[in-house]
Length: 345
Image (cartoon, rainbow, N blue to C red):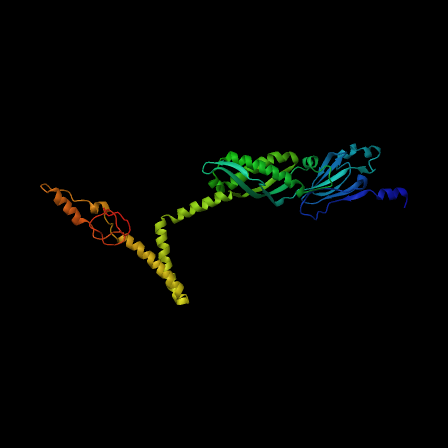
């Protein structure tokens, strides 16, 4: 084999990318000194596109299929420096494969709470998270903006950049929507669609687009959630007195059943307590209200023609014989009970 034939065999004849990963956006073909043989075969698979660069500038883009690298298929190659001295000589160019498939189930979320003014709760700090899908829609723009100087661009390399844009646009969208915090759950789809539209207007310059953006949850601060839970519980319970009566009535069969399950002592004690509570409640309901002490001890109204002495005698006759507080017999005179000090008139 002559030296010339050996040199010709060193030039690249088959160019392809067998992508075995699931998170690669672009991949630069590692050509030896970037020398490509005239008439080399370029294979671009479905879900891929190949971008040719000459001296860092995009020369052309090839879609899926098999392409022979000749001037007929790639007229721009005729202007490359290596071809000025013979169209069958090798040429130098960079070839970058772009994955045009959709990268799904990517996560986004607010690292720090988002401040929001709410009509019901005042100023709130909200957190949100969701998912989205990413794809490259314009290979030329993507290579110029992100994939020109590196051998490989992974999804993880752009996720932080996308997350920052997502959170910034989400904060702006949420503030402009002026939706009450309690009504946000009904606006997840609308917020996601508006957020997707705003983001794609910015990402088009970089050759990327976001699809299937979803807002999965917008959460309130823990203290607000506790207050809402307490408020909901009060609404469910309604009348607390009726709720207490219902709880006591429902517990009585349980206490009675415990007596037959080896818990006689517990059942009797619990039943006695429940019975006492019910008895007191029923007694307080049925017992007539006693008249006020002042009304009971007051002297009867004087009748026409009655003497003052008769009125005093009537008041003494109406004086109680026993203390209403402790039951001790009262002395005929005195304003306080000698036993407990309770006022008697």
